[in-house]
Image (cartoon, rainbow, N blue to C red):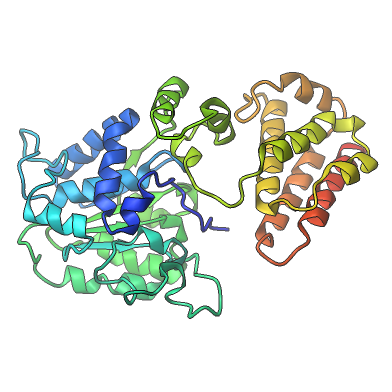
Amino acid sequence: MIDAGPSDADPGAVARAAGNAWGAAEAVVLGASWLAGPRQRLAALRGRGVQGLLLHGPAGVGKWDLAMAFAAAVLCEGGNRAAAGTPVAACGACASCCLMTAGNHPDLRVVVPDALAHRRPASGGEEEEPGTPPAEASVAGKSKPSREIKIDQVRDLVTLSGITAHRGGARVVVLGPAEALNLPAANALLKGLEEPPPGLVFILVSDQMDRCLPTIVSRCALVRVPIPARERALAWLRAQPGMVDAERRLTEAGGAPMAVLRESDDRLAQDVRDGLLGLLRRGSRLEADEVAGQVPRTLSIVGAVALFQRWGWDYLSYRLGGGLRYHPGDAASFDELARHWRVEAAGTWMDRLRALRAVAEHPLNPRAAVEGALLDYIQSIRQQ
């Protein structure tokens, strides 16, 4: 299932909502030192005339911000360029940069699912009618925004590829997540990638490259954006306004610093989180009556399931000889758990969690759903 939430968190969400998608992205990219290498690689590839670029890596490392900042650099008419003439950073002052700041650059197209409509510039070719809530524009309030990029959205790019650039320079398409392309849309995009018209640059972004159409991947130059070193990520997080408990939050985010800044109604309160983790740590000693007594009446199903999934992923990693990504201080708990919980049973529990996550937005009883997941946990540990 494609995650409808922002894969790379938006520290500049306020600016982006006002239309300054590039300005917010540029601020993030300049402050995130781990993005300097990928940015230079993008510039080098562009300098060689590459027209199809695919940024890939874990969610929450800044790929979307990097894509938007680089799109601005490609379109920039100013002087922030390397010796070979390749774009490094937008100048922020030329006519093109002013259009980017206004969210109305005629030579830029941003293609995202309706569920990620907040990523589109404030105005432009594919934007909704003014005043329409972006996440609901195409569904008239009757159903949830689509999580797919559809063929009509890709066909609209023909208007960009078939005309001369308004500003006389490059034209740029920023599209993501690439794995959200449904099959007809992916096939339609493939035609553009195979024979792109002169001056048109495709910048694709993907959190899960293995879910992208292989023929699309093969026609793009790949630029990986890895999770930064922990100390570098922590230094960046601690510099963000209002940041508290950066170490724990970075651990929960799997080391992805921008995911920490994601505003979410699904975040668990600290006492709820600690209580649920305490139940998981009891492992084979956990009893059903403890579950009934410690799960609160109101909590986020999505937040609880995400916590359970992180526990399961770390357990499977531990059993298979890997490290503990989310719970580095719980090696003793996993060691004791490994004496009782078979890997196959743990995998089955994870499958049930995925099924629960898929229906979490339906009107379920949160307490009953979370209790059910914990009772499944107990049962899976006791399977012989």
